[in-house]
Image (tube, rainbow, N blue to C red; front, top):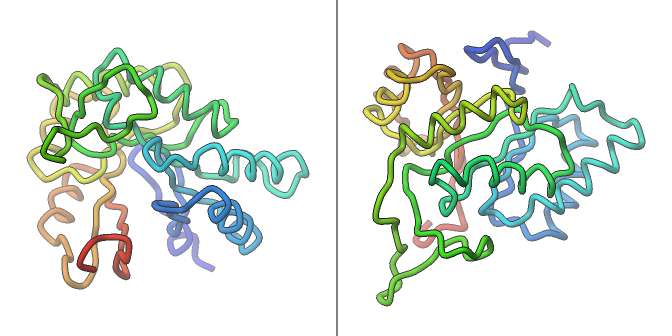
Length: 226
């Protein structure tokens, strides 16, 4: 098969498998079964996030396959994302180190800012989505996406991730990052489907050298009203 159909060359030269296993809303037992089935079927691109609370289960399955020689680490493309409570620059390295410990890996292939939103960190790393009294997300008083991005760039320099990118960012947010970036975002992961093709965003990111990764391409049954 043509390599261009099975992988995408990112702006930093890294090859990313075109199709990956998404693990949002996957419980630990379910995600283990899914990862096994995916790896046995030839998948090498696995996508998770600190906020999904399933990195440890995924890590257990990855280690089983790596130790048994069923897959090689260099053939895997593992993606995880920064927790919304860890957007403060001083929290970024600690957050990826927690993810790496759960995944039982020395590095990930791609690390994303999950959302352009900073939630208040109360010292509890398990309180992923702190709420206000009226049930809304409790956002931090201060937030600086550019400083968060610079903290992600340090992770590349430290070898904790090979690539960095963003998720759910609009055009102006991606442009702001690209203007100051030492390591430019290689990916913007967004919802994209026939009802929301994101044509304008596609064109803008293409000009900036940022690849679009689509999620919920066939719908998202876990969301209210879908």
